[in-house]
Image 1 (cartoon, rainbow, N blue to C red):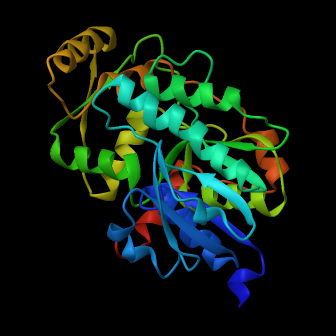
Image 2 (image 1 turned 120 degrees about the horizontal axis):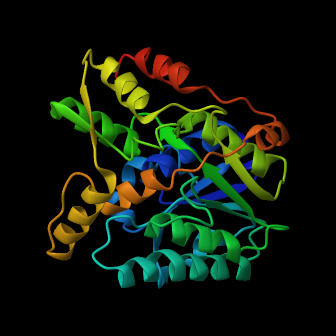
Amino acid sequence: MESRKKGIVAVTGARGFIGEQCLKFFHDRGYLVRALVRDPSAAEGLRPWAQGGIFKADLPYSIDPKCFEGGVRALIHCAYETRFKSLKQAHEVNQFGTERLFEVANKNQVEKLVFISSMAAHSEAASYYGRSKWQIEESLDLSQSAVIKPGTVLGKGGIFERTREMIRKLPVLPVFFSGRDSHKKMQTVWIEDLCNGIYQVIDQKLSGKFAIAEEEGVSIPHFYRGIAALDRKKPWIVPFPGQLTLYALKAFEALGLRLPITSENLLGIKHLKHFDVRADLKRLGITVRNFQDSLKTLAQDPQS
């Protein structure tokens, strides 16, 4: 069977946006793919691509070791808890959970560990999301493992789809930290280009860190307007005081109130960092669509 010839790839978070797309991408290119999910009974829809099986990986403690049997070429770790009730819970699932997952994988002699991080993860990150992913990056042996740092991922799912839905509903779109930091740009990556980068890491047996995104990036107002144009909307974009809004959000969250935007979101925007991706894309041998070309690709999909 052709899907067995390139080996076995296991994907955590296989029901998530990036995880499911990786599942399909690797299956279509000749790998036998295994899906790792919290609840296998709720993931039967993944069967057409997860022909290697669906296994339980409810971090940190419930990891089915059978998912690593038979010589797994790579583990792609996409799973990450972002809707946590407390930082203690988030740390247990994300950082300790990743540590436990990689321990089990190493014990079962998985050839390559691939951690899906983010451009939000860097030494100056202030959000829990950015700091925690950066700490995991720093804990890995990059002579053997690989870290993928995507920009903002575009496609029918994830934060992009949630942002699009927000733009559909809101008459006014707030832009934060738009004063002296207005030069900051978001670097985006089309989901298939990201999957191709991950594929090249595994197929070429590469190690190290790889930032995968468009080179230049777009301003946040440009980002909003581009998404709105998909639905023929012209949003009213208004600058809001970022630091004051951040204080207010933290106060609401301390009271247990959840709003469409969180303090985590604002901290990510405040500490947005630009990455020079040229060397990484060259090493991978890939090109990445820019924001406008990604939107064109999405607009051409009849189901978009």
